[in-house]
Amino acid sequence: MTFVGAHKAARLGTLCGLFLLGSSWGCGNPIDHQVSDRIAAVLPKTLGPARHYDVKTTGTSLRLTSGHIGKVTIHADDVLLAPGLTVDTLDAQVQDIGLDTRSQSVTGMSPIQFVVGINSAHLNSYLAATAASAPSRPQNLAVQCEGQSLAISFTVRPLLVNVPVSVSGNLVPHPGRPNQLDFVPSGGHLSIVPVPTSLVNFALSHVNPVVDLSTMSTPLAIDRSWVEGGRLYLSGTATAPPSSFSHPAS
Image 1 (cartoon, rainbow, N blue to C red):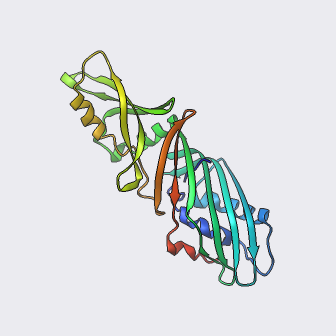
Image 2: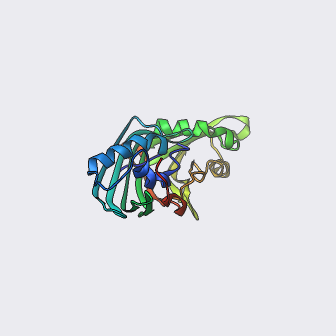
Image 3: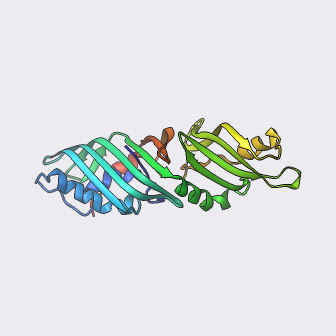
């Protein structure tokens, strides 16, 4: 399973309103693929533009005043999750969605489970896009997915000479801030010119957070990250705020 979203994608909480947009339930029971089509039609505006969306629903049951959707699964490719951040693949799943068919609103849903896959090129584009908001970052900062770890390279300047540094490690959620990811080194190599460890550590202290999703309107918690097949994967949960449980139909 793999996930993502744009400043609009940040509104994952409005997923619960997808079933209500541009349609009226009435007294009939729409079959699952009809519900899926309606969700897919509004995802580009809710999660963000994507090359492709695939939506499946199961366990749809609508009655006169209440209803239920057992599970919704979403797969997307090349989703603009946030400004400057494109996710290669997104997989999300939400279960047990309660519906009030009289008011055409969602009464509740379980947390959204997601996984996002991002390649090195998209990560570097994101770093470039956020460079202006992080002026203290070291020069020539770049990342590369290598094997099962992430390599971060940058330039330091001991004795007025530019020296390239490459350090391997992984991204981990910042303590107490599961929507921010810090780089934690596991090893590295320097150029032939010796570089003081203190200088490297100082530069690394200004690298973090490498990924910052704290501006997203939906509470987001990343619980795991790993590198596989040339991509960085992030998994976690998103919890829709109570205010999004009511979304009148247009």
